[in-house]
Amino acid sequence: PPTPPAAQPPSMFITKVTYKSSSAEGTTRRFVVEEPYTYAGLWDIVAKRFELPEGALGHLRYTDPDGDLVTVNTDEELHEALQLIKDVEPPLLRMQLHVENGKDEGNGAAAPAVNANAWAGALSDDRLSTASSDSCVVVTDPAVETEKLEQEAKLKAEAEALANARAEEEAKQIAAEIEAKERAEEEARAKAEQERLQAEAEAAAQREEAERRAAEEAARVAAEEEARELAAKEEAERAAASEAARVAAEVEARELAEKQEAERAAAAAAARVAAEAEAAEAAAAKKAAEEAAAKKAAEEAAAKKAAEEAADRERRAAEEAARRADEEALRMEEENERQARLDIARAQAEEDAYHRINALVKMGCSEAQLRAIYAPRLLAHVEEFKVQAAAEAELAALEQADVSAMSEPVVNWEAAKAEAEQEQAESVSSQIDQGRVDAVGDLAAKLTAFYWEVNPSSLAKVNQLVADFANDEEKLNSLLRARYGRDLTIIEIGGAIQAEAEAIQAEAIQAEAIQAE
Image (cartoon, rainbow, N blue to C red):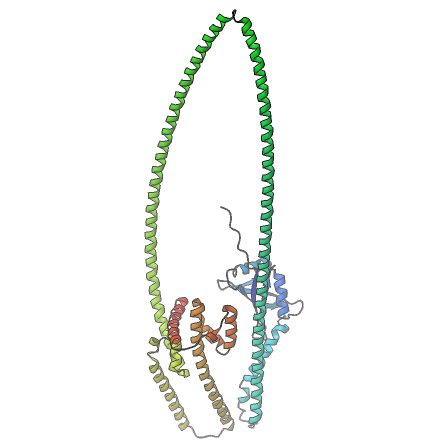
């Protein structure tokens, strides 16, 4: 059999390259690469995106399905990496950039590191550190400190808004590039189809012209043949008439002399004709006998072949029945094994759900919010979790009171100031945490109902998406609109939707357990 053609890499693919230098936590760039694929072209794009110094040396790496880190330095190695993503939609290749010869200080990679360190310094607690026993106590102005914190929060918000805007711009650019590529491919297919139809029309016209010429040539040849036959017939008639006249004259001249000779010749001719007729009858009888024998042999061969075919059909039917019986037995065995695994996975999923519910109760999540996420049978122990959380809080308060009663009241202005600021931060954090719990519950219920309607196979991703986009639902909506043409604004959390979300959540937990196994 002919060798099947080798699988072709995708016409375009998305690349995410991560660069970690010695002075930065890491920077990731995303871009689209189109044919032709060469390592030199890919390296030029990476060097420009990360603003590497001219002449910088390095290499790219990716993680293969076995979990090994594979280095790419040639076109062949790049094409081998693309073969791993040819069936992925969209085709995405994740790579790591490693720069050699002390060239790790590229402008594009250093900038994110500086911003990250700046935020780390802005949010650190170094300003709350206590002075040594030999130094004096310095009390900062609360107004100045508050203004400084407000400026830091404003800078952080502006940085996050800029990062979100860049991410959305890159997503729009990639979508536009993909749309342009698809439009070009569609135009190329339309042009090829038009050229094919035109070629077929020209071929049909050529065939019609050839058939017309062939018909004209056949008519001409037939006319010439008919004319030749008519001339030959007329010539034969003239020759026959002349010969008849000559023979008649000769016969009339020799009639008396040759009468007896003619009679003898006629008798001899009659005997010859009789002999020839007898021979012809014998040959016809022999041919009829041979044809009868051949017909009988053919009938016997056909009967033998039919018997062999019937036996072969019976054998194949028996083999097919045996094969189906084996397949049914194997299917039943696999079904029993799958059911056993599902039971184990369901028990593990329920235990994991109890742990998560306990954690949410400790965070202050209400029972209504829990009902929007979990099935009623999983919430049977919510009251026990609340009692346990209250007991732990009461025990912690008693322990704190005992510690306060045992120690002498010592005025430490710096520690008191730090404690006051800490209590204020915890108060704000508690309010924020409660708001996050409410948002997480609503977002999980909406996502569950949304995926159940548009793509049930993605229900297992709900928990991860809630964790990634709990603080940026608008970005999640924009990504959903780009993928499905609709977003979470069509979902309303009500009684019917809540009941459906509970059933879907149970199925999602079971799917996660099976996937983990």
